[in-house]
Image (cartoon, rainbow, N blue to C red; front, side, top):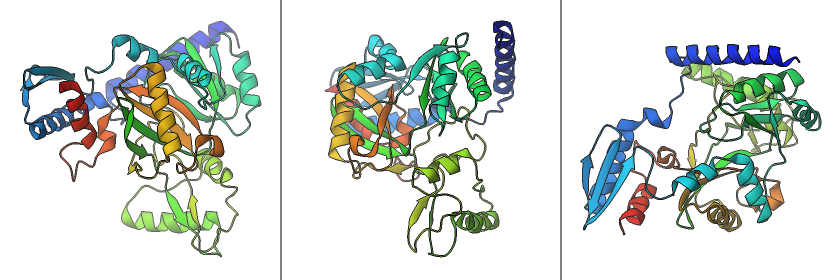
Amino acid sequence: MPISLLKFQRKLARLRKLWSDLRGASGQVYVHHRVDEYREMWRAAAAELGAGFNVLSDKIWEVRLGGRTTRIHNDILELDSPVTLQLAGMKPLVYQMLAEHGLPIPAHTVFRLDVTGKAYRFCENHRQGVVVKPARGTSSGQGVTTHIIKRKEVRRAAVLASLYCPELVIEPMIPGECYRALVLDGRTIHAVCRRGPRLTGDGSTSVAGLIEAENARRRGAGRPLLDIDRDTLFTLSYQLLSLDSVPANGQTVIVKSVADPVRKRVEVRTVYNEDVTELVCDSIKRAAEKAAGIIGSRFVGVDFITTDCTRPLEETGGVFNELNTTPGLHHHFDREKEAYPPAALLALKALLD
């Protein structure tokens, strides 16, 4: 495609995004929308320590204990240096560093919008789908497109990703669900999973039939329906299933990895919804701690994808796919039951000790 046409498409994409943001039409709730939630979370954790909590501005708060002081900017703590924060956001560099230390990462290629040939070839070599994302400087799914299978989709995804960064990354879809291990000062203190919807076989009904029955229940309860899309087909395929497969009686089937009825493949955020701290095997925890040490981060969410978190990644084909400094702690507790996540208390102790 001529460069001039690509530039025109990019301008259109930017205008569409600006208009969507202006109207608040994305429906996304990012961490910067959670200021009130985070302020009360940190206030409660400080009170548990017997520390003073002072509001300096809308998003900056100060915690004092025994002559020690630390300041918090919403979700950002004084644990990692600015250099570490910048490094962690450089996906290709992080991949390189992890690979040099023997940790599993996805196959990938770095490219630019005006040189997409190798991205097309990469897509053609990974028939089950690829992901395109900005190479640095983003979070929360910004600029990311998943389940890409066609050239024109690579181009469209590259245009979107280029709004955030001139360097782009393409990598294959990895079988499994998304997890995050929260590492503080070299120790895994919590782990969560984005658990996809599951259905249970009865020995006679096909997967398509199970989905149809589940949707009837959801329709009656006014809940979002499970549609059959690329995510469904990909999720079934790595379990060696199809829509026509008949699961055994009592067999659990994951039918989607992304349970978002609005955003299917573009800028889908990973929202963790299950505590799996006790399920994640020691091998993965030690590897996550090693990853944190490699980039020199004291406090980081180490993201990985696997089909079975109770087994080492090398056994399941799982990979580490991102390291998130300033990890969002709202993923790590139930606001209906707790005033703050235990991780917040541990982080404050690390800052004030």
